Picture: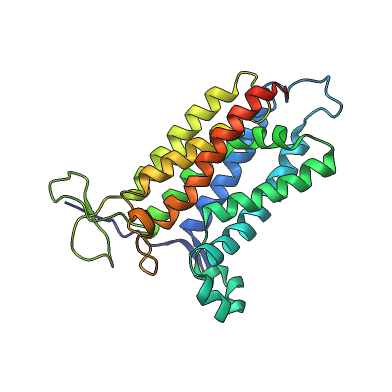
Amino acid sequence: MLQHPQIDPVALQIGPLAIHWYGLTYLAAFALFFWLGRLRLRHEPYASITQPRPWETRDVEDILFLGVLGVVAGGRLGYCLFYQPAYYLQHPLEVFYVWQGGMSFHGGLIGVMLAMVWYARSRGRPFFQVMDFVAPCVPTGLAAGRVGNFINGELWGRVADPSLPWGMVFRGAGGLPRHPSQVYQFLLEGVLLFVLLWLYARRPRQTGQVSGLFLLGYGVFRFIAEFFREPDAYLGLLALGLSMGQWLCVPMIIGGIGLWWWSGRRGATA
């Protein structure tokens, strides 16, 4: 079995200032989004100069700024509401203690969607055209976040068969080998989802179909990965033996299929 390398979560210490690896993965995620967003400007319909308001680099910057706000606010509120509502109802001020950890992807997604609603309305752009622009640029950020999870030795997997070659012992998780579920999620929700979405979005699609594929793809990959990830101790497994993460993916999968089908039937072009 393998031993988790137990990497120091502090990447750089300068006097009282500590720079954590997890913070650096967030910076990497934002940088990747900006780089990929500029590449998306070369794809149709965003490369078209015949639109009422042509897309430009400033749009990428504004979307990134609003997206960061949506991720942080939505991710934190989503964690508090989805995973520990009773605790935070009793300790409401701790909702703002973001340095203690606790972020939810599904909450962050809702936060980003609300931020993009505001952006689309303020710029006079179709909402799903904006979301189709954003969707292929997101998985690399998710991959960066899973790297941070692995470095911190958190969100480890369920106990694995001792014969599993890559079974790993994590500090604080007992002495049994576990699935390195952070790596699974890095490969599925990050790398594979990015490749599929990027290739799919390179060709003109009906408005909303790229967003629909993102919801479907992430929902399916996260649902699969959750079978190998240790459920949160304070929740355990819920109805039908599924985790909270899996139940939150169900509406994503259904919504993704519905959005992709509806967009194709509607026949609206970006």
